[in-house]
Image 1 (cartoon, one colour):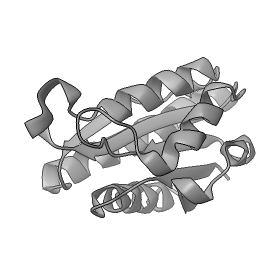
Image 2 (cartoon, rainbow, N blue to C red; image 1 turned 180 degrees about the horizontal axis):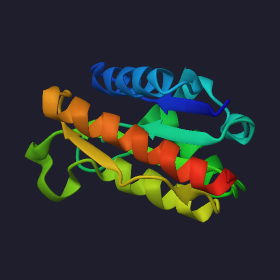
Image 3 (cartoon, rainbow, N blue to C red; image 1 turned 180 degrees about the vertical axis):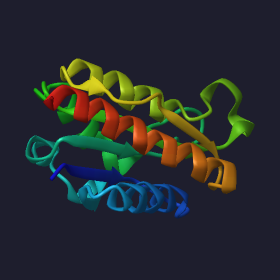
Length: 152
């Protein structure tokens, strides 16, 4: 059975909601999944799963979640070769070029680990609506497809 870890950081609850949608979609496809808050998670926990997901918010004008800075730094120096990763997050289009910048930063950090990007990153304006839920379900399907193709 495939295993996944979904790590999230949230202030408003939007990213926890995104994480919950991803967790539900993974479970619906028979993936064993654990959800964990970023400040309570060690990056090494990704070593025990097939699919690694981060759901992070962007604070103010492009800042990463303060409670996730150590996690972010540790992620960049980790070895996650053989793992599949995906990144999703919410932000506010009000911030223009800084909209959801944390999603891009975590994607870049994962790429340094040697993990395979399993799906395009998902950026959501504020809270997830119906079309966002469909996008996140497609995101999960792509993560599973990419992971399955590596184990065949």
